Length: 138
Image 1 (cartoon, helix red, strand yellow):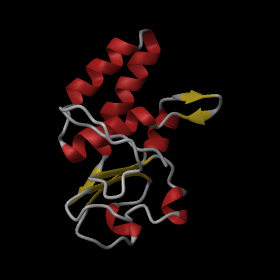
Image 2 (spheres, rainbow, N blue to C red):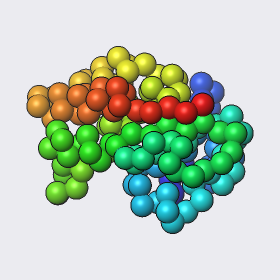
Image 3 (cartoon, one colour):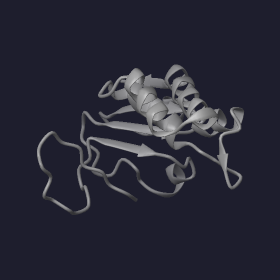
C-alpha cells in the first residue's frame, strides 16, 4: 500500500490513510487478495486496473467504481520497463475520467513536459487511451 494526500493547504499528517476518498489499484491481482474498499468513503472512488467491467468486480457499497485495462493498453503500446507493463500513466487517464479532478489535457501536458521524445508520446497516448476506455459506474 502507498498513500498520497492532496490538498491546497500544507499537510502535516504523516500516517496511513484510514478513510480514503479515492483508491487506485494498479495491479489487478490485488483485487483478489485485499479488501481494497476497506474504509473507502461512501461517495469515494475505486479506480482499478482490470479488464473487468465495474459490475463484474462483485463489490458492493455506495462508492463509485471505474475500471480500465491499463495493462492491456501498456502492452498494446509496447510501454514496458524491464519487461513489465507500465500502468501508471494509463491509470492517470482513468483517474482523470473518473474523478474529473484533473483534466486529460493537464495530464498529457505534464507527461510531455516531464519526458521527452517517443517515451513522452507513448505515455501521453497511454493516458489518452485509458481515458477513452475507462468504464465508470456511479
